[in-house]
Image 1 (tube, rainbow, N blue to C red):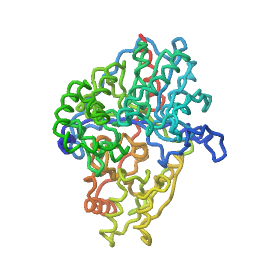
Image 2: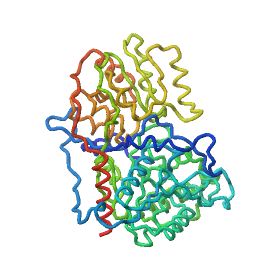
Image 3: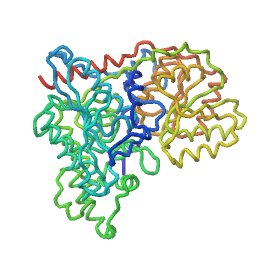
Length: 528
């Protein structure tokens, strides 16, 4: 069975965090992808549904007694720098990312654009290679397309996983994508390759750079390297600490991608589990080949471990994330926690005095974000004199988002505000008594929490992973048991009654520029 989430949490939960956001990129991100744009047929041109762009940042833990537990911070060492990339000779950088602007606007996409723009501003060349979903079932239609975004060359690599010979294997090891990346390397001949997300491109996108012995950097922004769903949430909504047995991931991958078990599964299951355990330990496929596509599941983690062992530097966002990844076999030797920075938008207005009993939720309307838990908390206590403003939307035709609105129809304490642009967040959340973050998964340093800390807005968040790291030791902020509506109702009531002191704004968080400069230094180090 998978690791107990409580055991894993107690083993990992004492550390700092980090994460970023580029306010100035929002305008550039919105260019293109209009209804009338002429786009290749393989590009479905979807806009990301997150109303704010959750990016990275760093939380420096305050001294003194921790708020709700935790241990003293251990700093990730900063490696010596021999030459700053910004002052050395121009280099060529290739960024690999699972999806990109203008059709997908999310934290990783803006992060990639920000790094590429930062490099260009310092005289270097940058290019992006990204995956696009193809609606075609004909492999002959999967031809790379050269385009541009914000003066940045972009190569779009189309594919349709449903036509793969072995979809479960191609999810993490796609030889078609590897061949396309090989062609890009041959044409562009970069000095450094930086993969900012491997999902969709698969781990095979690293193989051409590894074979060519190119300096290679990988940023792990979530948990895709150990979880095909990337959230470490099982298909039934429970937290997972990572696979203990090769077939632990089978139910989740079936629910996510539709991979099916063979009809003869009941007869081969005992044998397959023994073969899978051997493959999981050794990374060797034989004799798992007799099980066909089923062999992909026990080989996923060993394959990705092997790819990551060959890179020159692995960038992670927090100590919690680092510990969890290491616990699941991701190589630690070249891993570095790089604190990302963020900055307030230039047009941010002064923070108004908070209104007692008025709370805000900012985020996508997706089950793992946990908004339904807060709505249930309000429904449990009709006499609770508070209001909740909801900023955000869900994917088109989302049953979850529709169900939330339906179940709260006529509830005057809940106001649906819709989508909000990132530059407007600071002025929007400043007047609330608290920001609720009822996440059910291990959030990776959400922007909105960092912004609230900077503004001195109280955060009421789930006691999970990096969220706990961000708030422990900061008086006035509240941690609540995840998924427990009764506990959330009590927390909202106590905040409305003034049970906790007002938070103090945090003014010592790093900037985006300092993070980008550190990444440029890493490029110089891996090339040395």
